[in-house]
Image (cartoon, rainbow, N blue to C red):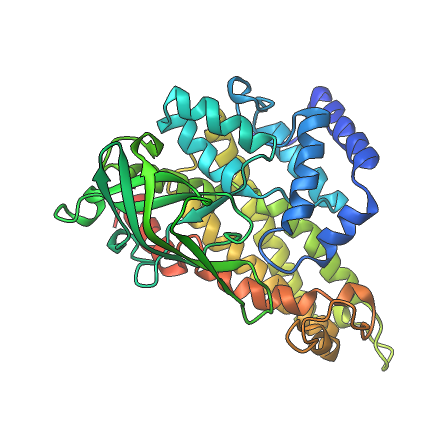
Length: 403
C-alpha cells in the first residue's frame, strides 16, 4: 500500500491558523533572541515570554498534552505542523524540562494530587523545572548514583550532588533521582522525587562551558528535607519512571523541522560568492556533503512521524528514541561543522570566549555569522547529555536488534 503524505484540508486549515497566529504574536525581539541563541535552550526570559503567549492566547504551550490535563489534545499531524511552522518562523523553543519531560511522567505515574498541583503551574509558567539525574561519578552509568534520601517522619532527608544541571540557576523546582535503599541492586533502590529549589540546604554552583555559555550547574543537597508526598511512584521504583522520562527527552522533540530550517541557512551561506568569484556550494565535494546531510534529515523526519503516530495511539516513544537521539545529534553536529566551514575565518571572532563575554562587541562580517561558532562548540556536548552516544547504541543493540 502506498504511503499517503498529503495533508487533509483540515490539516492545511490548521497550518494557516498557526501561520496567522505566528505572524500576529511572534515579534522581532523574540525572533532575534532565537537567532542569537547558541546553547541548548533559549534564555529563560525569552522562553517564558513565548510560553505565556502560547498559553494565554491559544492554549498551545504544551502541544503533546492531552486535553484532560490542559493541553490542546492534538494528534501527531497537528503537532508536526505546529513544530514545523514554529521552526520556519524562527520562534524560540519553550523549555522542555517540565512541559515535555516531567509532565508525561506525572500523567502516567503521578497521583491525582500531584497532577492537580504541578501540571497547571507548568503551563502558566509559575514553576520552572530542572533535571537532577547525572552526578560527578554517575552519568552514563546513571544507576550508580549516590545521592541519598533517608526517611525521617513524613519526610526524606536528601544529601548528595547533581551535575550538568541545565538551568538550575533559573529553576525553582527540580525532579531528582535519589537512592532510598542502599542495600538493593542499583536500579531497584532508586526513587523519583520532586524538590522545591528554595528548600534550605540547596546550593548551586555555575559551570561555564567552553562555548562561554552558562547553562549548566552543579547542585548540592545538604540535609534537604523533602516531603514523602513529593515522591512520584512507589518507593525504590523510580528507575521505571526515570527510563520513561528519558524516552521523551531523547526522542520526542521533533528535531527534523528545525534541522530543515538550519539546512536552508547552510545552503544560503554556501551560495555566497567569495573573493575569487566562486561559491562554496559549487564545489562538488562540499555540495555532496550537503546532499548527504539532507538525506539524513529527511530520514529522521520519517522516523519522527512514525514515533508521533505511535504516541498518538497511547504508546511512548520506546527504545527507538535512542536511535532518534543519536541520529539527530549526528546531523546537527555535521550541519554546524559545515556552517563553520562555510564562514571560514569569520567564525573565530564570534566565539564567545574570544569576544570576552561582551555581547556589545562589534561583529566582524554579517550578523548572521555571529552564533555559528558558539553553536558548533555547544553541540559537541549533545553526544553526551540525555545519555551518551555509546549508551544509546547499547540500548538499540539490546532492545531493538535483540542482540
